[in-house]
Length: 418
Image (cartoon, rainbow, N blue to C red; front, side, top):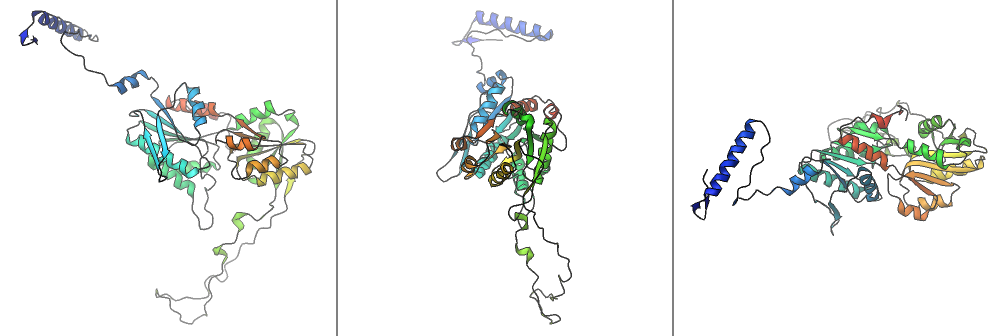
């Protein structure tokens, strides 16, 4: 090994290099990590700053958030002892969504917190672009944390429509999502729309805790289902609290599913055996459709309360509070039946349009929702709204998924009916 300094060999450098080579050969033979000696006149190769940062970060976890609910994202990050990863999500002047990921995500477990909001379509587009940006940047996994899944109420075929919940699931999977964390889906069957694992967390333990700690004399309460469709959820809470159950039955207006549309139109009638030929070459016969039995129309009974609520606290439960007219009507009926205090509880408080004003003027004493959706503006318009924090549940789910631990602990005592 020869070293030249200013065109001349230096015996001092030759000796140092020889000693370095001797030590490296010895330790390599002994299978011990080698510490090379620095030779004067040589520079050490600079290290990759991002690589050093990844090594220093033992978590390998990056937490991003869009613009739908940054407060919840900050709560989750603080519980995990992390900082939100730098990311810029904005709308240009032409209303297009633009996303810039300001850190390396290569080989990292990426979690993106984005929930349904008032501008639901913008929130969805932000999430899709963020996931696709992480996918094309070689992230190890991309987990979408969507406490309230938008379009979850449109999970069934109605009339000549479509199933937007299935469309949204396909878009999320195509954008690069490898796992989904959500909470209290409107219909549990929505999990089957996704081609990736889905963890449908439950907020009921937090609502149960609120009832036990914040409602005085809750033992004198009765759990109320505002329609037969939510009776199973109400029954689950009633059984866990050892309380009575009441169900509001009947409809005050015609249901959407019974509204008349084109499918109720009779088939066109053409005189029989006229030989009328359609452009396709087929012949039409008026016998088609004749004799097909028609389903008898439903007759909705007047709205009624099944169960005793007189002199008791009524707690109306559901998964979503959005269109509050039904809640207000149910509360008025419960008040007429003798309930002296009325609560409305739900996981997702969307509270769209004039909902805060209607709730403020209603006979409902308190509305309890979680912070799965941001509703700070609505709380300024209605002082009855109370918020339950569920960030601890989301942060624990993120920690377990990142550490590849079992999620069954978060679903203990959860039955098929819940």
